[in-house]
Image (cartoon, rainbow, N blue to C red):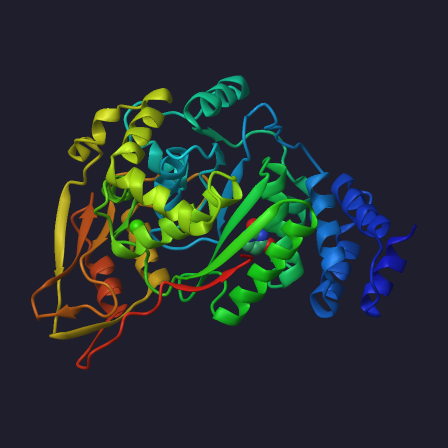
Length: 434
Ligand code: URA
Ligand code: CA
């Protein structure tokens, strides 16, 4: 088999065989196929697309390129959730204990990553003592006993994806549905998921800016999952404004606690119930999505979800008393309100720019080496559609530096107030795969 023939075939819009896709992924991973040939094939795929079968084959070839996490010793159907990423997305912190409380095994492997705030692990590390450096045996034991544990990333998962993603980044081939869908799905499958729930975000703070693009990506991923034997569902959710109120690490832990207590932000609560119902259903803990939702509402009301969060924290070395006393979480030195400069209705809170403001405060990492400040961030008091009077606080800034003029300007420039009434945007645009 020759790489040049594979490139030519795809260039001419022909379908690649399973063997050809495996040859490419194996050869590129071990270095026998050079970057220039891989680049040419990526560009051919970008223009000529791939059918469902090719996409599934590409996904599984990438899964097979490295280590795979074996969760077979964990009882039950392991359902993983993936979000395409947004600003102030506190869902993982809420969903874990929420679905574990009704019996879904949550075996979460998580990273730190770059972004406006830290990743799930950084957020959890704002709880004194909490750690994710646990052995595989301990991890499996905890999930079997408590239904939930989080471990830091280890092993060499999907090296083909790492190498290809870096190459796509410099060859203008990131934005391709078959390439994005196979990249995301390969990582979830290699991490051991039996079933997958996807939250594909759309809007200013999202990777996919339009609903049409988000829908195409979601459908592509659901098709791949179902083709390779991992039941998959997806929702398209709004990320034009940040999710919930809090953006920042310890601030989001507090928001997650509020949500598990049943008085969290309306949008975050709804998103967690929607995604959570799908997870419970796919894990076969409920017969219908509606039944699943009722079970989740019940564990919020009767306190079992909150108890599960406490148990989870304690079992990984954390101080569970922060759940009853969130004041113990890291706190910033300066707490500053941002007053509205006019009366009206909130028209826009541009998610990615608000995220950038949180990052400038120190809530996120610009490079892998950056230190993150767990205490800082932003807590919104208004969301799109809310009425405001001049002088009302739009949000609270939690900072550890005195001079935050740059942040205030950025925030003012990205919160638009209209003199006319504004309707709230829908949170969930679509559900795919029911
Ligand atoms: N996120 C991924 O993991 N892969 C892509 O290709 C794009 C976004
Ligand atoms: Ca939030």
